[in-house]
Amino acid sequence: MAIGTYLAFAFVLLLFSYIVFRMLVRRDYRNHARLRPLASVAQLLVFFALMCFPYLFNPPEWPWFWRLPGSASLAIQRIGIGLICFGFIVSFGTMGWFGMGKAFGLNITGLTKQGPYRFSRNPQILGGYLLVIGTAIQWHSIHSYGWIFFYALITHWMVITEEEHLRRVFGDEYEAYCLKVPRYLLPLRCKVGNSLSGNKSGG
Image (cartoon, rainbow, N blue to C red; front, side):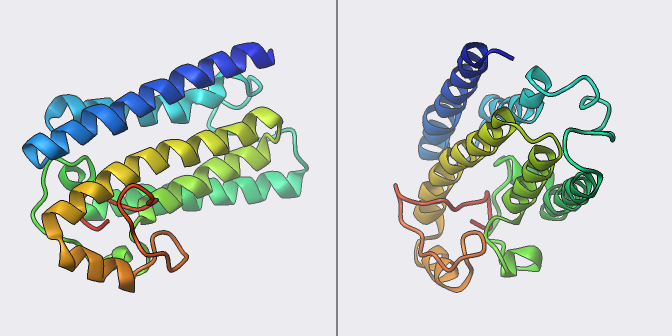
């Protein structure tokens, strides 16, 4: 795939994501203290577009559920598939345990600190990282590694917006939670405007 076409699609994806998370979602949180259906659907579309992005540049075999063989060695491919499967379980298992209403910002009833949120404030995003990295190392290329960067940047915009909201809603309780539980896996204190944290109820 030509690098110019790749960058053009990437620019559109990033622009759409920024508008959704830093404008539409942020406005709903500020004005309504929750997401309205339009913003929630827009979030879902962002992640659908992000996860489908490799269809633009990976080989024809990739769409068939990341099947073997890929461009890496057999051992690396198996590691990649393992990361994909584990990441899928962590991400979607967490969302299922958390509740889809909370996961998409439609139902905020309290600050969730139990289950996987005892270890990370964003376990579903960690799972997504594993899935993306597993795919990238299985079909390694500059395009795949760029996809990891896009995932990191888009989730960065999402969690900054959510953290601003969670701090407004839960105040000192959320701050205390941030001090006890790492944002991802590192013990980083949350700061509005310079944060990589935040889930709809657990932060």
